[in-house]
Image 1 (cartoon, rainbow, N blue to C red):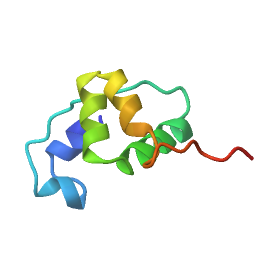
Image 2 (cartoon, rainbow, N blue to C red):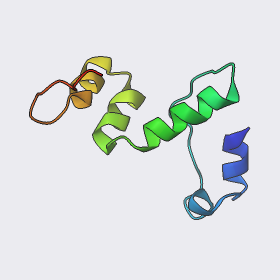
Image 3 (cartoon, rainbow, N blue to C red):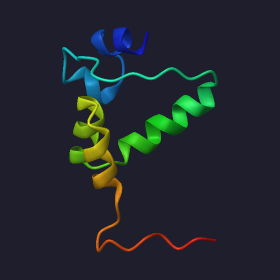
Amino acid sequence: MRVGEHQLGMGGYTSRRRPVELVYSEWFTLITDAVAAERQIKGWSSAKKEALIAGDFERLQSKAKRRGGKPRASS
């Protein structure tokens, strides 16, 4: 669905970068969950996105660690 829209040039960013290729997908029951996941992934580094696309979850996990190796403070 969205890939077809991108192929047709709908949207600003992808209209100048066609053809587009779907490299990762995930199913969500709720659209709000899908939008939240998309926003989260868009904020990731290129290295982290490449690990996700490759299915390299070990590398993905290592890229998710905070710089300096300190764990996040719990609330």
